[in-house]
Length: 91
Image (cartoon, rainbow, N blue to C red; front, side, top):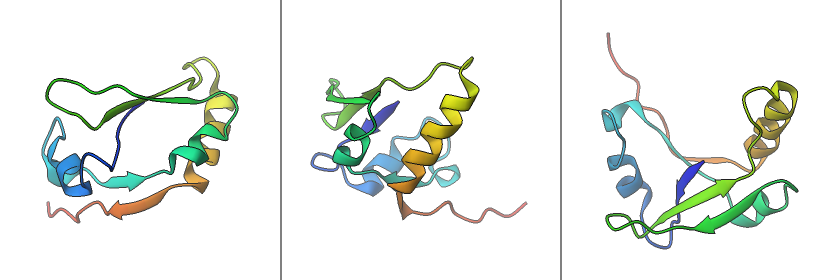
């Protein structure tokens, strides 16, 4: 999972990095210590030439591990805070 470290990028800067229309994206926050407390996950700061904030979360279950993926989602959701909510779009 690709994430931004808030030390180097604000929530708004992160939102503007969306591959598609930024209005179709929300921004969430997860404390790195909360992620690291999930046994299988590892977080590394992996800056890119155009994004000093870039980091990666490694260890997420593969697609074939549905039960484990669902459990991982529940664990991550517990530590998630919505920073910029998804905009209501008309149409």
